[in-house]
Amino acid sequence: MIERLKSLFGSPEDEPTQPDSHQLAVAATALMVQLAQVDNNQDDEELKTIISFAVEAHQVTREEAEEILQDALSQADDATSLYEFTGMINEQLDQSEKQRLLESIWRVAFADGRIDKYEEHLIRRMADLLHLNHREFMQARHRAEGTD
Image (cartoon, rainbow, N blue to C red):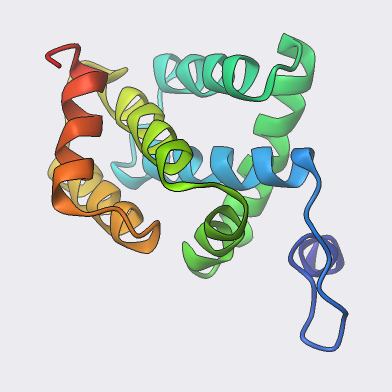
Protein backbone atom coordinates (compact mmCIF):
# COMPACT_ATOMS: atom_id res chain seq x y z
CA MET A 1 0.00 0.00 0.00
CA ILE A 2 2.83 2.42 0.82
CA GLU A 3 4.38 1.85 -2.60
CA ARG A 4 1.04 2.51 -4.25
CA LEU A 5 0.70 5.80 -2.37
CA LYS A 6 4.25 6.77 -3.30
CA SER A 7 3.51 6.07 -6.94
CA LEU A 8 0.29 8.06 -6.71
CA PHE A 9 1.74 11.10 -5.02
CA GLY A 10 5.38 10.73 -6.03
CA SER A 11 8.38 10.76 -3.78
CA PRO A 12 10.70 13.76 -3.45
CA GLU A 13 13.44 12.20 -5.56
CA ASP A 14 11.05 11.52 -8.46
CA GLU A 15 10.58 14.01 -11.24
CA PRO A 16 7.21 15.70 -10.95
CA THR A 17 4.60 14.09 -13.14
CA GLN A 18 1.06 15.12 -13.88
CA PRO A 19 -1.47 12.91 -12.14
CA ASP A 20 -3.84 11.14 -14.46
CA SER A 21 -7.59 11.65 -14.28
CA HIS A 22 -8.03 8.51 -12.16
CA GLN A 23 -5.55 9.78 -9.57
CA LEU A 24 -7.32 13.14 -9.43
CA ALA A 25 -10.69 11.42 -9.10
CA VAL A 26 -9.34 9.28 -6.26
CA ALA A 27 -7.96 12.37 -4.47
CA ALA A 28 -11.29 14.21 -4.73
CA THR A 29 -13.20 11.11 -3.66
CA ALA A 30 -10.81 10.51 -0.76
CA LEU A 31 -11.75 13.92 0.67
CA MET A 32 -15.39 12.87 0.59
CA VAL A 33 -14.53 9.56 2.22
CA GLN A 34 -12.68 11.40 4.99
CA LEU A 35 -15.81 13.46 5.55
CA ALA A 36 -18.09 10.42 5.53
CA GLN A 37 -15.92 8.82 8.22
CA VAL A 38 -15.37 11.82 10.49
CA ASP A 39 -18.59 11.39 12.48
CA ASN A 40 -17.98 7.63 12.90
CA ASN A 41 -21.29 7.07 11.15
CA GLN A 42 -20.53 6.41 7.47
CA ASP A 43 -23.81 5.36 5.90
CA ASP A 44 -25.02 4.07 2.56
CA GLU A 45 -26.52 7.43 1.54
CA GLU A 46 -23.14 9.12 1.89
CA LEU A 47 -21.45 6.41 -0.17
CA LYS A 48 -24.19 6.61 -2.85
CA THR A 49 -23.67 10.38 -3.01
CA ILE A 50 -19.91 9.89 -3.41
CA ILE A 51 -20.43 7.41 -6.25
CA SER A 52 -22.92 9.74 -7.95
CA PHE A 53 -20.39 12.57 -7.72
CA ALA A 54 -17.69 10.42 -9.31
CA VAL A 55 -19.99 9.40 -12.18
CA GLU A 56 -21.06 12.99 -12.84
CA ALA A 57 -17.80 14.85 -12.23
CA HIS A 58 -15.41 12.42 -13.87
CA GLN A 59 -17.71 11.07 -16.59
CA VAL A 60 -17.11 7.46 -15.67
CA THR A 61 -19.37 4.44 -15.47
CA ARG A 62 -20.90 3.38 -12.18
CA GLU A 63 -18.47 0.44 -12.04
CA GLU A 64 -15.50 2.78 -12.55
CA ALA A 65 -16.92 5.08 -9.88
CA GLU A 66 -17.15 2.17 -7.45
CA GLU A 67 -13.52 1.31 -8.23
CA ILE A 68 -12.53 4.94 -7.57
CA LEU A 69 -14.43 4.76 -4.28
CA GLN A 70 -12.62 1.57 -3.26
CA ASP A 71 -9.24 3.15 -4.08
CA ALA A 72 -10.23 6.26 -2.14
CA LEU A 73 -11.39 4.24 0.86
CA SER A 74 -8.07 2.42 1.08
CA GLN A 75 -6.05 5.59 0.60
CA ALA A 76 -8.14 7.56 3.06
CA ASP A 77 -7.45 4.89 5.68
CA ASP A 78 -3.70 5.23 5.07
CA ALA A 79 -3.60 9.02 4.75
CA THR A 80 -1.75 11.04 7.34
CA SER A 81 -3.17 14.42 6.32
CA LEU A 82 -5.68 16.04 4.00
CA TYR A 83 -2.83 17.81 2.24
CA GLU A 84 -1.95 14.55 0.48
CA PHE A 85 -5.17 15.01 -1.47
CA THR A 86 -5.66 18.79 -1.55
CA GLY A 87 -2.14 19.43 -2.83
CA MET A 88 -2.81 17.50 -6.04
CA ILE A 89 -6.25 19.06 -6.41
CA ASN A 90 -4.83 22.58 -6.03
CA GLU A 91 -2.29 21.88 -8.75
CA GLN A 92 -4.87 20.53 -11.20
CA LEU A 93 -8.14 22.40 -10.64
CA ASP A 94 -9.01 26.04 -11.06
CA GLN A 95 -10.96 28.02 -8.46
CA SER A 96 -14.42 27.30 -9.90
CA GLU A 97 -13.68 23.57 -10.15
CA LYS A 98 -12.55 23.55 -6.52
CA GLN A 99 -15.79 25.33 -5.56
CA ARG A 100 -17.81 22.64 -7.35
CA LEU A 101 -15.81 19.99 -5.52
CA LEU A 102 -16.55 21.68 -2.19
CA GLU A 103 -20.23 21.80 -3.09
CA SER A 104 -20.12 18.04 -3.72
CA ILE A 105 -18.38 17.53 -0.38
CA TRP A 106 -21.23 19.45 1.27
CA ARG A 107 -23.73 17.19 -0.55
CA VAL A 108 -22.05 14.18 1.03
CA ALA A 109 -22.39 15.83 4.44
CA PHE A 110 -26.09 16.51 3.84
CA ALA A 111 -26.75 12.99 2.49
CA ASP A 112 -27.60 11.56 5.91
CA GLY A 113 -29.96 14.43 6.71
CA ARG A 114 -27.81 16.20 9.27
CA ILE A 115 -24.56 18.09 9.61
CA ASP A 116 -22.40 16.96 12.49
CA LYS A 117 -20.14 19.60 14.09
CA TYR A 118 -17.12 17.49 13.14
CA GLU A 119 -18.26 17.37 9.52
CA GLU A 120 -18.61 21.14 9.33
CA HIS A 121 -15.21 21.64 10.93
CA LEU A 122 -13.58 19.22 8.48
CA ILE A 123 -15.24 20.88 5.49
CA ARG A 124 -13.92 24.25 6.68
CA ARG A 125 -10.40 22.76 6.89
CA MET A 126 -10.78 21.33 3.40
CA ALA A 127 -11.94 24.71 2.08
CA ASP A 128 -8.91 26.37 3.65
CA LEU A 129 -6.55 23.78 2.15
CA LEU A 130 -8.23 24.27 -1.24
CA HIS A 131 -7.64 28.04 -0.91
CA LEU A 132 -11.35 28.82 -0.86
CA ASN A 133 -12.44 31.83 1.16
CA HIS A 134 -15.39 32.07 3.57
CA ARG A 135 -17.73 33.43 0.90
CA GLU A 136 -16.92 30.51 -1.42
CA PHE A 137 -17.33 28.10 1.52
CA MET A 138 -20.80 29.48 2.29
CA GLN A 139 -21.88 29.64 -1.36
CA ALA A 140 -20.95 25.98 -1.81
CA ARG A 141 -22.95 25.09 1.30
CA HIS A 142 -26.03 27.01 0.15
CA ARG A 143 -25.89 25.44 -3.32
CA ALA A 144 -25.60 21.98 -1.77
CA GLU A 145 -28.58 22.73 0.47
CA GLY A 146 -30.52 23.97 -2.53
CA THR A 147 -30.98 27.43 -1.02
CA ASP A 148 -28.91 29.37 -3.54
